[in-house]
Length: 354
Ligand SMILES: NC(=O)c1ccc[n+]([C@@H]2O[C@H](COP(=O)([O-])OP(=O)(O)OC[C@H]3O[C@@H](n4cnc5c(N)ncnc54)[C@H](O)[C@@H]3O)[C@@H](O)[C@H]2O)c1
Image 1: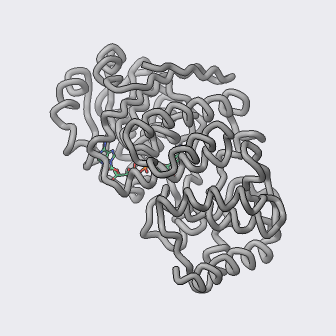
Image 2: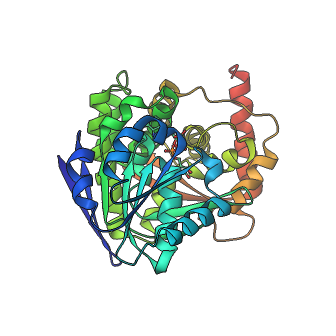
C-alpha cells in the first residue's frame, strides 16, 4: 500500500493507494456518525459492500449518476438529508463514486456546519488519478462548469484500484484523458506513457501510473493550494475541453479533456510554443484513446471559453499548453485569435476526414 501526504496551509490530507485499500482503511475511518454519498450506478454495483460497511454507522444517500446531478437542487437535497440524519460537527462525510460524487459531496461537506470531515473514495479512473485529490469541490450553474465551489481538503483519500474492475471501457478512456494531461505536465510520466503507448489500458500500467499522477498533483497542491499560480498548470487541455463540454455536451469530461488537449496542442505549435515533434508524440497518445472530431462553425463554442476561471482580462483567453517535456506554459490569446486557431484546427481535422 502506498501513501502520500499533502500538507497545505488549510489542512492535512492522507492518500492511501493500493488494491484492497477500501477493505483495509474504510472500517477504521467509520468512527462516529457518518453520511455516505454515492451515485445510482455505483450503489447498484456495490450495494452489498456499502450496506455492510457504511449503513451500520450512518446513512447512505444515493444521487442519480451523471454530470447532470452536479447542480444546486441535488446539493440542497444532500444538505437537507445531512440535517435530517442529525449530523454533528464531528461527523464524517464519505464521497464514494466518480468525480461527480466527489465534487458535490465535497461541497456539501465543506458547507454543512461550516465544514465536517470528508473522506474521498474515488471509484473511477478519472477520480482516482485526479479529482479526489487536491480539495476542489463544485457544482455547475446555468450550464457553466464548476462555477460554484470551495477549496476543501479531504482528511483522507482511499484509492482502491479494485473498483476499476467494473468500470466501463468509456470511463477508462476518460481517466486516460487526465493521465495524458499529466504526461504533458511531468517529464517522468511522459516517458512512461511513451514507453507503454501500446499498453495504456492494462490494469497493471494504470495502477502504476495512477500513483505517479497523484504524487505529481499532490506536489503541485502542496505548493499552491488555491491556484494562485502554479496549480493553473493542472488545467492543461481544460480551457477548450470545458468550452466544448458546455457547448457540444454528449461526451464526458475526460473525453473533452482529450479533445481539448488536441486542439490546444495545435494552437501551441501554430504559436511557436511547442516543438512539432513533441506535439506529435502527445497527439499520438491522444489518438490511441479517442478519435478527435472536427466541428463545423466553432465560434459559439469558443465563446464558452470566456467563462474559464484562468482568464484575467476581458476578451482574452488563457490556456496552459505544453512547450517541451515537463515544461507547460501559459498562453494568452485574444478571443478572436483563439477562435480563429480552433476553427483552423477543426478545418484541418475535417480535411483529414474526421
Ligand atoms: N475536483 C477536481 O479537482 C476535478 C478534477 C477533474 C474532474 N472533476 C470533475 O469530475 C467529474 C468527472 O468525473 P468522472 O469521470 O469520474 O465522472 P462520473 O462521476 O460521472 O463517473 C462516470 C460514470 O462512471 C460510473 N461509475 C463510477 N464508478 C464506477 C465503477 N467502479 N464501476 C462502474 N461504473 C462506475 C458513474 O456512475 C458514472 O456513470 C466532472 O464533473 C469534472 O468536472 C473534478
